[in-house]
Image (cartoon, rainbow, N blue to C red; front, side, top):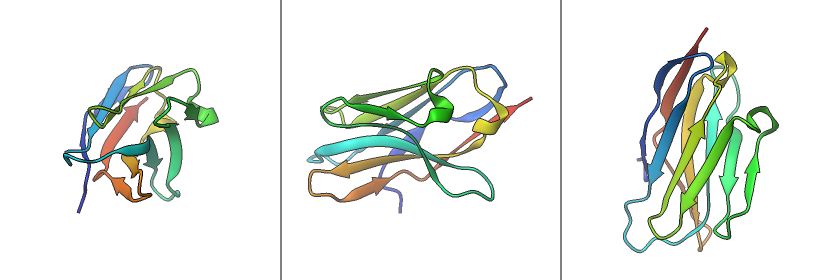
Amino acid sequence: QAQLVESGGGLVQAGGSMRLSCVNPQRFFRNDGMGWYRQAPGKQRELVATISSGGSIKYADSVKGRFTISGDNAENSVSLQMNNLRTEDTAVYYCHMRSIFEVDFWGQGIQVTVSS
């Protein structure tokens, strides 16, 4: 059962933009890092971007300069702004959060399809 609530996604043409959002509805959750992963058909799940509770950010090389991650620790929310999308960005995107007790939380996955 998904523990995080994701929104956004859908179909966009190559070169377009899309924003994904995610929130943890648990009242007393305290995060120790948030991020986005993706899984394309026939491939393993891969890291897209992460942001630590202190604000340190990491991107996969394939999305650097195109994607921007932002997080709100107080709201337990994380977003991913995706610009200049490419067909190879097509995948199911998963939101991830890790609690201060090192428990992992995942979203249900949201489809992003980039058409040529």
